[in-house]
Length: 137
Image (cartoon, rainbow, N blue to C red; front, side):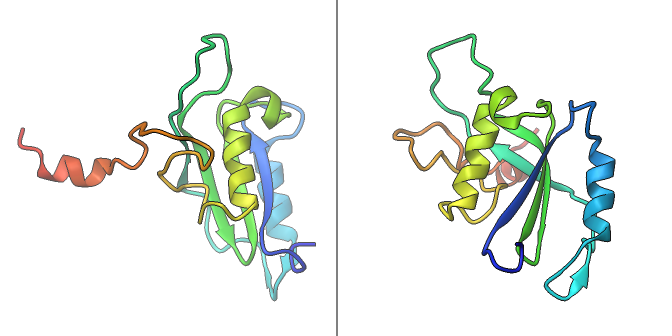
């Protein structure tokens, strides 16, 4: 399936105590796709979920760095830190970000930008690394 698609995502909630994330990573390391076996490095990129306008204060749709991710040869693995077994139920904004990537609307799940369905400026394009380097303490 991975070889037939442009993008394939395996999403894993770190609060899932039925399926453990180390087991999922071991399964990926034992798979062979697109001419190689497993990932060449551990998932270390920050999975960014954009800040957004939500009027309901009881929602689970958070924002910010939600976990780690890695992509190789058409397979993307995403760890969602504040989610259990069902990512769309426990972390709907994280699931929506992964869907945007799956549909090709953003280049990666680590992209710092607004949701593609948003209008307005929520500060998601701000580069904290550059800002910290130019600030004088």
